[in-house]
Image (cartoon, rainbow, N blue to C red):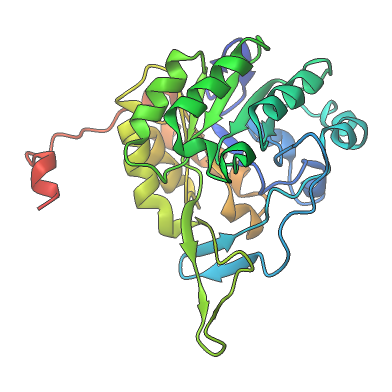
Length: 315
């Protein structure tokens, strides 16, 4: 049977519900020899700042049980080089292109978006608020509900394109942040960014990462990510894009069922760059097998009636 796989976000059509996560797929051109990039619903670019960044010194990637730690430090080529060197290729693709913006000040977020607004080939923006705020001593923007809301409001006034805010899970209630950015004009939220973690070399008794702690991703964080997506989807009306440990079709289906409108695949891209297209095909096949004519019918389809109260699960 024919299955509708596409969905719309503020006038932009995504051909399916599987996107490549920022930082795991480069700028798209690195993967064309390994898979059909156009088979993805969209590509989310590696984070862009106003000026190029070298990132953190090594060691900045560590494999862990069920995942990986990274402390790349938002290394990127800067927005001007991106426009000259990467955007011409991206314009040739038949899939949605979402620019991810990272910054050290609210003004820098605005400057990067303003610079990209004048260029063809960018369909929308994902805003990484897990960046250190240099004006506040290095604390993450994303751990302040007020700052996250302000960033959203400032950027919303600058664009009519889809605006997606990528939320950190390293807060008490992620739903509070989702409601704040919804009120400030965000079109969607990405949930979740990486969890804080660390690894130790017992031979040297030193941390393995040069920055001591880093961001944990991969299958190990999937249960946390699912719970955060479920919490967020119940709190807001805007779409939630699920991220966290998605390795196969079953994982993606779980996220859709708990309320994600779409998903992003990340760490699995380092194992199999074609994983996203395989997962997209798997979701379509699942729908065909179950006589579902639109993948949108999966979104929020979880039957959460367990007979057990939330309080009982905490005891």
